[in-house]
Image 1 (cartoon, helix red, strand yellow):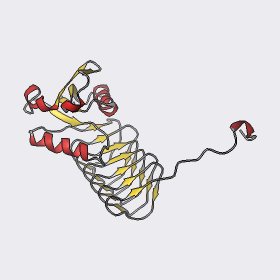
Image 2 (cartoon, rainbow, N blue to C red; image 1 turned 180 degrees about the vertical axis):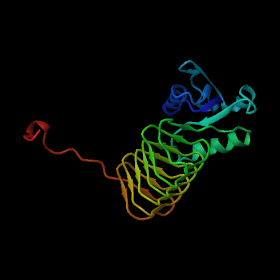
Image 3 (tube, rainbow, N blue to C red; image 1 turned 45 degrees about the vertical axis):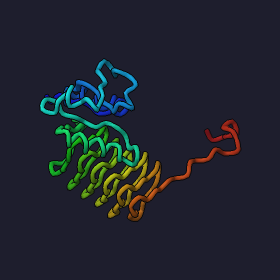
Image 4 (spheres, rainbow, N blue to C red; image 1 turned 30 degrees about the vertical axis):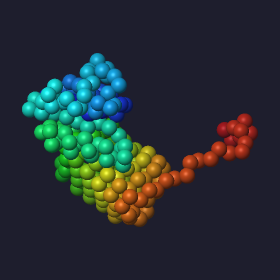
Length: 218
């Protein structure tokens, strides 16, 4: 079993470590963050160490790494750490929920997180450093590096370019390409391809002028 250092000390890192331990995927030995984010020394009994010292404390010849941070800066923060750790010589593990029934033709890169209740169809390619949370991925989809998809649905033959963010409950129609750094907010429906750096937001549901006590059907 690989010994793994997780980059990150937030909720996503905590969840990743829990899933790795619960599902007997990897042995998590520590967390690491950059010095400017190092405001505590442990998380759930495991040490949090300075990323600037990581090669000395947990050398890449003995330990692997997983980058477990969210889509900050349209995934650029995760991309930067991934590239830097690779330059330091680290190899990366994946965190994939083990009971998921994936097709044999699925192609997956490294540092990929696929959480519980994801469903992936045939002829799908997932590049490095991608996060999928409770999402449905249709046939012939290609998800390029550093993208983050949260509880959404991709129809067939969708191409997700690099560093795309798709928020909760969004639906991407078939044969669509999402340009690099596209942001699709929560609850959106995308029915045509997007230009790079496009932003799509759904208006928040408004409170009505009357109180729930006035409702007679509930």
